[in-house]
Image (cartoon, rainbow, N blue to C red; front, side):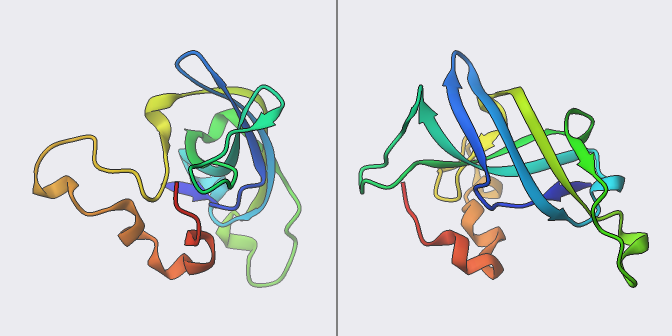
Length: 133
C-alpha cells in the first residue's frame, strides 16, 4: 500500500544518482498501514530552484519506504481512527532517481502496458496538474 500526497511541501536537491530530500506533509490517509510513501517536491540545484522550460520550479513525486518517514500523530478525530491517517516528514533522506516521476514523464518501459501516461492515473487531482515540465 502507498500513502502520501502530491503537494510540493518538500525540497529535493539533486545529488549524484538521485535526490537529497526534506519536507513535511499533512494528512496521509493510511500511512500507518503503508509500506511505501510518496511526497511532492520542488527540485533545487544547490539553493536555486531548478526551472522548467516555462520558467516555473521543477517538481517531482518521489517514493520512499514508509519506515524512512517520521509519522506525526496529529489526527485525533471521530471517523478517522481506523484509517491510520497522520502527517509525515522526512529529513535529509536520499532517494534514488529510479523512484522519481513527474506526471508528464514518458514511459521508461516499452510496450502498450506502459504507454498510459501517469497523468491519466491521477486526473481526479486536477489542481496539482496545471504545470508541465
